[in-house]
Image 1 (tube, helix red, strand yellow):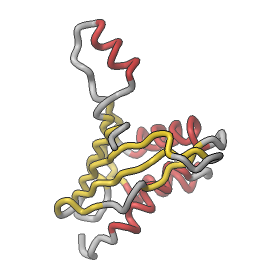
Image 2 (image 1 turned 120 degrees about the horizontal axis):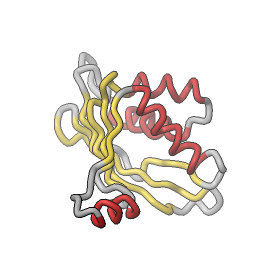
Image 3 (image 1 turned 60 degrees about the vertical axis):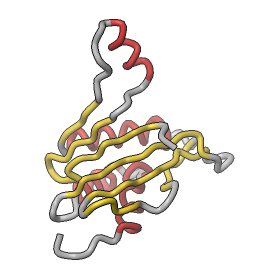
Image 4 (image 1 turned 90 degrees about the vertical axis):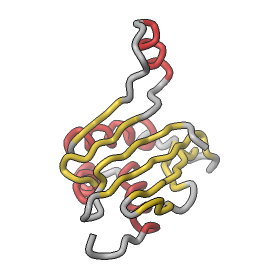
Length: 144
């Protein structure tokens, strides 16, 4: 990265992609924030997936999406499920933290639009490339 990373601004843009109502603006944000082959790994998938894997005697699989098109579909689906109905919004739970050069930790909350209370959340560990775009995002849901 040629410019120093503004961690707070970067975290704001990361959260904004999940709340963006306009599909074109959301896609543009994804292409700005993510490397073309960027990957998001849902480290601890939902209980139904864990149960199904266990029933087949498989270890719990991480869920992965890679590349702009798959990431766009992932972010869009989260938007459609949680934000579009007007029930929730995603927010940074605290300021992002630079853990190592080009490695950020971002705690986030899913907040009730009605009450303002956090109803979910997690932690994303983001590894950035030399241009400040996400190479890898390891997402942990439900982490306090």
